[in-house]
Length: 224
Image (tube, rainbow, N blue to C red; front, side, top):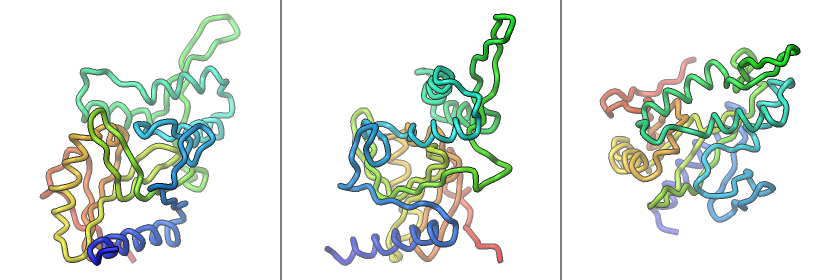
């Protein structure tokens, strides 16, 4: 193992320990260990999949025990679908609304008519009622390109957190210029649901949101 590579791994390990030991996330390593299939490591059947439907459906059922199997399928379809003409920002805005307000599903009333009812995706009032999973070295395939991300954070199976890490001798901006912007072009579906972007070299960290230029990424500071 080269020195550069081991330094990258050191930063990644430190970030993983922070998520696991201080924030209570489940942390998993995927590269060359993930088994595809519904009964596989994360339930993905393809490296193109970015919504972890196993955890997503479990959370939907837990948070909305009234959901039937057909309504679960309807909610998943609405969460995964998008207009082919929509921009990445438009898709992200649409998914944000579903995460914030819930997914509308069809409910049959006693009189035979139907109406929509919102299925909660995240329990914002009780954080411990959600599932937090950070996956290191996750393979993601786009239509033409294949990439491997440093850390992706999933809340109830939804990839809300993207973390790009560099060794501590590399400027943090390199993570934005050479990695994040490349992922936007090659695996844009990773960011359909994204809420937070974190760039770090282990010594300095920047936090931003989708669509922000680097100058609008702000220093991550811990509150004590």
